[in-house]
Image (cartoon, rainbow, N blue to C red; front, side, top):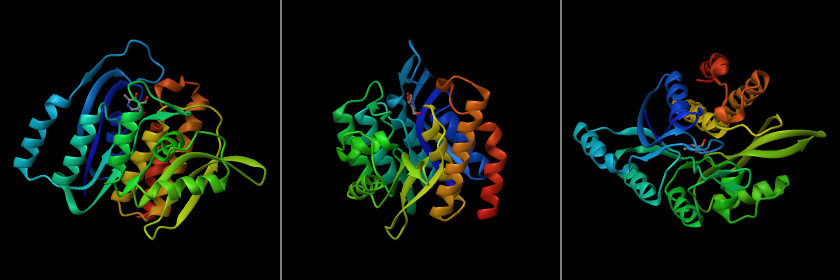
Amino acid sequence: MRVLAINDISCVGKCSLTVALPIISACGVTCDILPTAILSTHTGGFQGYTFRDLSEDIPAILAHWKSLGLKYDIIISGYLGSISQIEMVKSIKRDFLKNDGLFIVDPVMGDNGILYSHFDQNFVNEMKNLCRVADIIVPNLTEACFLTDTPYASFTESDYNTILQNLKKLCPQPSVTGCDITENGQKRSAVFYTERDGSIKKYSTEKIEGAFHGAGDVYASALVGALARNVPMDKAVQISAEFTKNSIAQTKADRTEARFGLNSESQMLSFLLALDQAS
Ligand code: PXL
């Protein structure tokens, strides 16, 4: 199994490639990387960060890879710094994904109802086009709202199902993370996801109050690792959601600042044991 993770390197703040590489590799699969940009920190909650766009380097990297005949079982794309990088990712999918490979898009654009710095409606429209060529997409609720032109609000389970139905117009297997629901009077956080046969399901975990940066990256990386290990979708979602929830709980217990990302390291062993049992 060979995975390619296309994402930025935020040197500090535990997101994108500094999360994808350790988690996917720990799952026992090769994880190659294509860095889209290098930043001193991520853009959520830090002032004065540096940002070097690596677009100019990418064509030569790809030319070299072509000469090596590299092909991937799974390609996952995350934070993309510009519309031209979205176009590059489409061509990478065409050139480097095996015929029966999986193309997974994490349409990183925003959180808590708003877009991150650097993104606008034009970028959202191009991201919709990238989702149209994906097999699986893993937006958070904010990104799902932008992709479906749904005003961000407080939603019922039937609203979440409608959002999933609308996302299915873009991609066959959408899922949405961070959906607040109430079960037996308890607040819980759910992932609504789509099985290969098109049926929509949900998996919920305990809701831990607070905003935690990098949770989407931990979830997406764990899901890729699990799917690369041929774990079925429902079990892969369950294991990834539990790992993310446990990492959030650890971060809260450690009282580290949310902008420094999730403390997922100490939860890695139980995640891998769960994965081992499922595969
Ligand atoms: O975690 C998503 C993410 C990835 N990369 C960069 C970001 C963010 C979110 O803020 O700024 C550079």
